Each structure stands twice: as structure tokens, then as C-alpha cells.
Image (cartoon, rainbow, N blue to C red; front, side, top):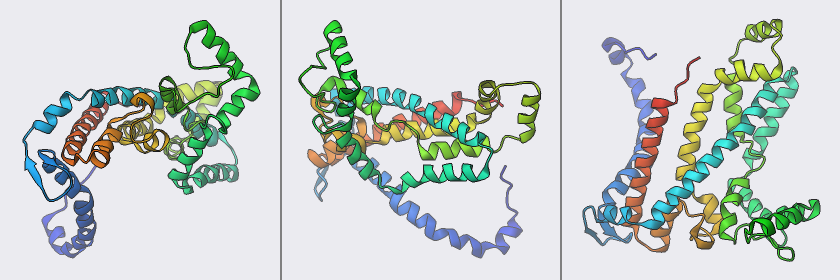
Length: 315
């Protein structure tokens, strides 16, 4: 809880407040100014240069009739559901590390989680693009080696999917109906270092006496997780949920690198962020891209508000 600072103390320590001025200036310059500029230019027919024409709400009217934009919101909604499942391995990994008795091994596991964060995310995306390559990619080789591809071809013949064929490599990123499953597979085994560290911080706040009482009552490892650990890290889970929703709605780097600026075959991987990028840097319609960004901002704000209001944590 924040306590108000008395007037006398504020007057006595006023020089200290100048220390935060550089940080505030940087935040205003690089965060608030671009956002305010986007709001301003969303009301203009603007191609990014000096020339622009005020058109009022025309960009927003156009956006509400943009089928590609609303289709991209449907795609990103599916990706958010996918990513909810991807939170589970990180929670399990955090619990497993927390239960390691040796401090040395706990430290080692944390280091092993943090080391991949040093690798630039762009490199990771290139690796995954190679992973999905239909001819040289690891995924198709694994499916061939394990015989899973034969199973998929058999299932395809039964259900008539038209996706898997005996003598043709699987085009994970080139077949429209396989693009969303590919975006789901991406990141396997879905253990995010940041998520694990957040959950670990929550787990370490659980008192040892709670575990001792549970052991005296004969509570097993699974029930410990269900009745003790999971309820007590729900604050961290909620934080991860907010970050996940915001990150998924804003993100487009993955789709841009794997599928291209068009969102892949049939535009099946098109998300709002990528559509905004497409309109700005491919079509040169910066004013319309700003309007798309404003709509995206409203969606993120609304979902964050709903999450804070209805996803409550009662311990």
C-alpha cells in the first residue's frame, strides 16, 4: 500500500525528483509520443510522407468493413486459446524445479532455463522455419522415421482431409489448413523461461510449514499441486495470462518470418499486427495502419480490463 508523502518531506527532498526526469523524458519520447502520433494520423489519409489529408473517421469506417482484418482477429483468438494450453508445461516445470531438494541443482536448472534467452529470438524463429521445411526439415523426417506420417496418410484417406499424401512431403507452412496447427506446434515443448521464473517466484513464497502440514496429513505430490501450489501461484498465473493475451494480440514477427507479409497460403496465418504491418509497409497506407493499430489497442485494453475484473484470485 502506498503512503502519501507529506508536503514538508516533498519540499525537503525535491532535488531527488529530478533523478526521474530523464527516465520520464525517454518514456514520453519513445512510448507516449509514437502512440499519440498514431492516434493523430489515424484520422488522415497518410502515406508516411509530409503530405496528408484529413478524412475524419473514414479509416475506421473502412476498417469495420475490412473482412481480412476481422478474419485476422478470428485467427489471433484461436492462437490465444492455443497459447493457454502452452502455459501448462511451464507451470509443471516450475513445480518440478521447486520440488528439487538440492539448492545446487535448483540453481543449475534455473541457469539452463535462462541460457536460451541469450539466443536472439530471430535466430530461434529461423530454426523453426527450417524445422517446418517440407524437404529438409526435422519435423517431416521425424514423422517419416517414426511411421507417424503413414498413420496420418491412413487417417487422411478415411476422413478425406486432403492434407497428407504417401509420396509427397507435408507442406506445413504452404498448405492453408496446416498453418494454424504449425503455429500451435511452434515453440514445443512450450516451456517459456520467463513464465517458469515467474511461477518459481510464487512457489518460493509458500511457507515450508504448509508443506510439512500436508506431509503430516499424508497428502501426495499430485494433491499438493492441486490444493496447495496451484492455488497459491494463481496471482502469477494471472500475470502470465495478461502478458500472454497482450503478446499474442500484438505479435506478428512469428507470422511474418514463417509465412511472409501475406500471412501464408490463403492468408490463414494473418493476424491483426501483421495486417497493420502489411498496410503500412507494403501498401504504404500508414493512416489506415494507424487506425488498425487503434482498434487493436481497444481490443487489448478491453481484454485486460475483463481479465482484471473477472479473473480474481482468492487465496
